[in-house]
Amino acid sequence: MKSSSKVFFLKVIIHLGALLPLLNLYFLAFADDLGADPVEAVIHFTGIGALNLLLITLCVTPLAKIFKQGYLLQTRRVLGLYAYTYALFHLLNFIAFEVQFDGALFISEVVKRPYITVGMLAFILLTALAVTSVNKLKRKMGKSWQRLHNVNYLIIVLVTIHFYWSVKSELTSPLIYFALVIALLLFRRKKIKGLIWSMFR
Amino acid sequence: MLIKIPKKSHLNDFDVTDESIYHQRRSLLKKMGFLGAGALLNSAISANAQAGFFSDDDAIFQTKPLDYSKDSHNQDLLKTPEQKVISHNNFYEFGAKKHQPAELSQGFKVDPWQLKISGECEHPITLDYDDLTKLFPLEERIYRLRCVEAWSMVIPWIGFPLASLLKKVAPNSNAKYVAFETLYDLKQMPGQASRRLGGGIQYPYVEGLRIDEAMNPLTLMSVGLYGKTLPPQNGAPIRLVVPWKYGFKSIKSIVGIKLLKHQPSTTWKKLAPKEYGFYANVNPEHDHPRWSQASERRITSGGLFARNRIATLPFNGYGEEVADLYQGMDLSKNY
Image (tube, rainbow over all chains, first blue to last red; front, side, top):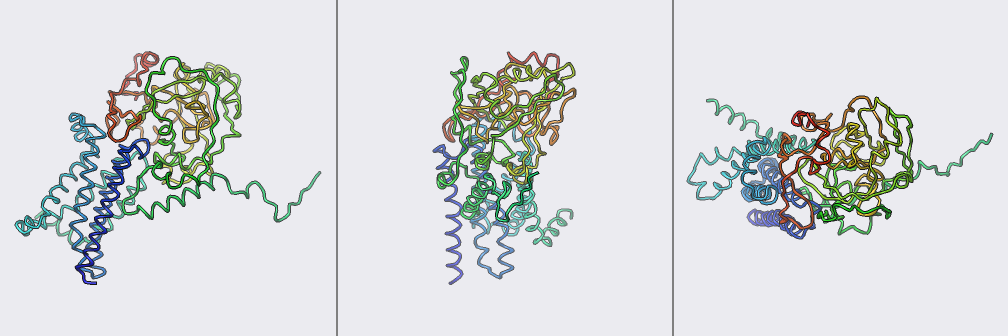
């Protein structure tokens, strides 16, 4: 198979794999068929979904390098944009269904609760990446585009902290995510070391 | 003396696969099936959505109808539908996710049961399963239940005042506190056996009240809800209900009640003393360090678009009955 058709099939799978669960989720939630507390269910599902998609996005480069499958890199943008979509739904769920458009409550929660502050910061950074993912902008930005998109490594750490801080007592799942994030960052240790050095220069 | 030499083929009680283990196996298989389908996006989809596919292969715990007198005051409160009350539970002994207790507890054995009341009292007693529903007249109490996680329900409990039970054992003058303990049974309660499933809290679960809180007429020993005996996920066969305190005070599946001189060390307070206090009175002025307690989402019927955020009331709206218990106390320090 040509690599262009491989990319096409992969993208079809990604679109279906990301959109169908989301459609199914809201269908069940609106029908009140998502457990006793659909609000909690949609918030958790979209939040964990965003984190999983971010991790999958970060897996692409190592996989492409290890198995020498360069065409895989062409799936990074669509995966990243779905991670952003899930994060956006996560935030909208919180605003619309949890605090129910109480603006004052929303702002005080973002300011007063460290785990929400961290989550909000990650979302703002992710928004910058999503907006600049358009080809035209990418070309215009030249080298600074890559610099901006390196922020992804910070985002994944912030999101994992956000998850870790949000749980009541079950720490095993967030700790597993921390281990995965560390593994993915270790794969890029040279690049990240360079990034950290350049900050102090 | 009769000496029995068992044949090799003879099966003892302990050879029989425990019913609960059998059910766990089933639900484990169920989960694996689901994991396969939804692994990409860690399925948090609820028990209800799953049950549709598998509803015929799980034996459901059988509850029995109870005789009781109706609550004459609170019939106008909008109740949380029974299906939601019995499928959305914090009972970490059967899993820390809300849908897990209903799935993992259906093989739970409640008969025989022993509830031992002891400590600083004149007549310690042990109640067995039948005593729980027969020793005292049962009454319905429709109470608001406010979870520390900022959601709430309205539940028609059935039970008897804890005060009736305590009067029977006659606390002595040393009895200043009452401690409660949940069953500890690694075979029947998978959350106690697995840190991951059980959320990493210490077992057995222990809760406590001051003796005057325990004697307050609102404090209920519940044996049922919605007209029937309790299902396991709600704390069968007997649990505490203290409606002016956060839900975690209302300990489930109780096997021991002890009258004590000193304040007992309680489970959530031990785990995170800055987040959960001994008193745990519902207090909209005192936030949990990680979220606001000023308002709550009332779970009734209606899906995602139910506009259900309401203001949280001091003492969950039971201030008239209980506020004088805390006269002169600084409630922001004694949270």
